Length: 501
Image (cartoon, rainbow, N blue to C red):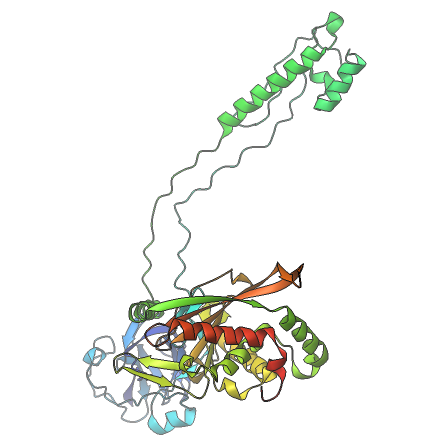
């Protein structure tokens, strides 16, 4: 029997550390070859780490939430044969390899889609996207503006202040009547009138004495005459008695409100929340993009009335056979077509080398909402898809991303990004460019507004495109013309449907 140490594999793309998300095994458990033993999280996705050998778990190298360096010991197994750890070697928690020494058995980089077969051949942990990725979605996008190749998931949500106290609600109005004593102001907002002498009020069997005009006035005021003390002959109720009753009731209610007003207690306490590795990566990318890129934004109003009519007609005719079209495929198609005339928008800028790389292929990043926040999967070769192809690809990407089954290829390689807040899109926004890209197109919500057309005021469906550009390589005039080209295509939707448009 021997000891086999599985070390944290090199996930690739320059990643030096990962966050341990969860263990699938515990000390004493039997492990089979290719069985997943742990989930780790990079700034791109959550990755499964399988075991390259069979054995029994001896020890775990970390706890969930711990940041671990690439090459550090992840787990130790007791295996048949010699293993890869010499007798008397330090445990996972004390090994120097975690600080950078070469591991006992070198682990090759986990490729973009390392398979189980590759794991067997190389005895290395494969990197496989798992459903746990939804919990910590890819970063680089906040408030509808992605950064990096994946969308920014929200950071940890601060818990509610445990020290907070709820303000008491005012108690319900009292319903005192007749000869009862007034209710205490602290427990009632409405108090019965002061106790009346039995000589001043008629007995319950008697009808209060009042003229027809007084009775009519009482009905208008909503006053029960049985609760009013009459000052006229024989206890007759007069108009002055009604006015006195109203004044007294108002005074008592006001006093009750003043006394029963809830006290707003000051809140105490605070909560310090350490950033996860994912959130730190988001912060770094956001800061990098805003520090390195001089953004400028441009907002253009689009009349999508005709587009919505065409979309409804296409869905009515083809939805059952080819799938339903949302607005997003039309916008994506318009961007792809407009890029033919504005290739400088479909580019990346290496500011250190001073080189702008333009791409003939359009790899369109699409912002996607997940339970953990926003991610930005990439629709590769969007130029090769028609409207229905774009719709299907976007839907598939969104489903894989929400279910944490997106691969690394799904989350990397975008050349221009499309971001949308959907129904919450607001009037305008200023999206943050996905560094090192040079342009991002933001979609705001559709609203119905009046417009002048042919001398008449008509209702039209309008939508803003809010876009940002890297002013180092994109001039304002070119940016405006690009978005206006997109607008022209969206306002003439037949061009988006026509073959070869």
